[in-house]
Image (cartoon, rainbow, N blue to C red; front, side, top):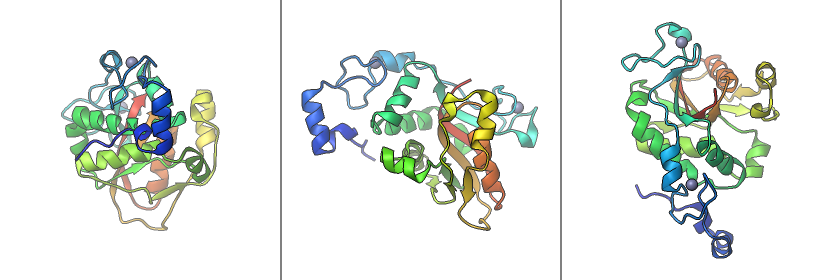
Length: 239
Ligand SMILES: [Zn+2]
Ligand SMILES: [Zn+2]
């Protein structure tokens, strides 16, 4: 599977921008003309996370287990590429707000290479990207979690299913809120698209997981129609 070209080279406007503005690293904003958009220094300084972390107790899950031994069935294993620190945090902000959607490819490649084996042990039927509100997706032109899930789907051979839930309410950005306000902010923002699902085992995909309020809400929405949520994948974990 060929690596998709960065967005900036894929369109006329992108080409014009490329002509007038030198290519920059999405992490440090220094000059860098590699197609991946991440200079070697930034790539080196990403704090990668090894293995899964439990979203219940925030402790690492032992390599041989698929769930947290402490939290048992209430555990939601989180597979995150790296900690939410510069330069990874800068890259995610670039991907969300500056149109550098080509980064989704690089994130998916890294997630598959570093966490793919552990993710496959979850034996999931589908990946489900956390949806944006339709108006926000229209504004941005893409759902960053959807792009990562689509590329991961190709790399891991697990279907990406974007049609099981929708976001029905537009809420304030979770990251700007205090922890206590996040749970209330995210309450009932998702709705299932069917009254009764076909009992799939799912892995949710989001860009940044902080308290886990958003993914828990999406998981309970999917469970309410008979699906099972096995784990969560994110680009970054913000503790
Ligand atoms: Zn850099
Ligand atoms: Zn736990």
